[in-house]
Length: 529
Image (cartoon, rainbow, N blue to C red; front, side, top):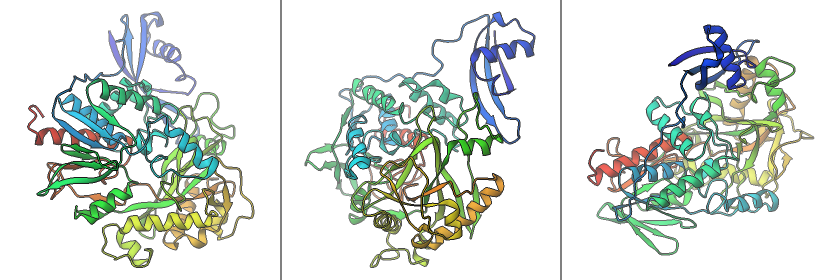
């Protein structure tokens, strides 16, 4: 017999399967020996009051064993010799597009400008060690995309739960912990995700697809307003309809599209800083306990949203027990991001603290470089580039990042010394309040004061602001038809994922990749789509 229960437990009672079995047996009047297994379907922590509870939805197996696998497996047929589709980019959008194409009987040809997920580690390490950024292999470019080495969080606010569950199950099939199927805020971890990505590549190749690394798309082949294929930087051509999943930092792609008349539009984004606290302090604040998380709770998370001056101010990509990383993709840039290992056991916790900014804001506030037309579709990209170069200059023209203590920032004071940080290239004291746009700094200061009223102690001079966080999303939208998902004027081009302006994270990009694969299959006349 199988029963499902909603449980509200103390952290110790929810600390292990055996502890949950003992609780269920006692509360439901069962013999614990008859409970063969408990599977957690949903797990969330309620830290709103001083007593912390863990809310669980569990499936209890009474006098019978659970299935061997806790996830739904997808079958991938052999697609050798089948019609091919070009997938540009091996981030989550591209990988899930490729896997879905295989399901539908089409052969994906994946081209990725960067290196495989393990080899790119060497280039990533050089950023901190030598302050050198490889423009083709960094935290954004390479197998797995920006998500591979930037935390692996799988939370999405999308209401399409069926698709979300499919994405999570595919991750589990390729080696992710099945805990992601139940956690309220699922997370694979920077240390675990690369192997999962490598396994996904293995499925693509075993099924008859191709994956080409260090192969940058330099141009689309367009004939009579229809994409026929791509040309790479080596001159090699790959023919077929194109799913364009290049990620939010492929600025050369945006420039090429804009120059060649492929319709783009400027898109709002959010810009700010990485804010870093000691993880123990965040645990104390969020769990209302001077001793912090204790033995049975994970590193605490937070999520803040406020309004200031008619624009949203909010935390973004919060990384409990994580570290801040250099995310530049070219010379004369400093831009930061955050990540966490799977155990979230680091000394610090960080998040992006960002302000919503629209295309009209950068025009009205005169935030563009000189000579940029105000109606240019790339205005937000130019604004990003300007901010990142100013940050590079303020950091000493290296990957050292300008930084300021949090309370000093709100008081408009220079920090004469800085606390220790996880940002390995190093930080240098800088008056962020002075040289960053007042449109952003004024709203950040107001937001910090509101957040401190919600969580006393959050606004502290022991917290460090590190500049700048600009890559929260794509600065453009590659405009596509709502029904066919093809570009509005160029047939056979399927803008996909975060870089195209249609996703905002690993899961939503994966979902969009699947949708684009289905749209391609429909265009090619595949039955049953």
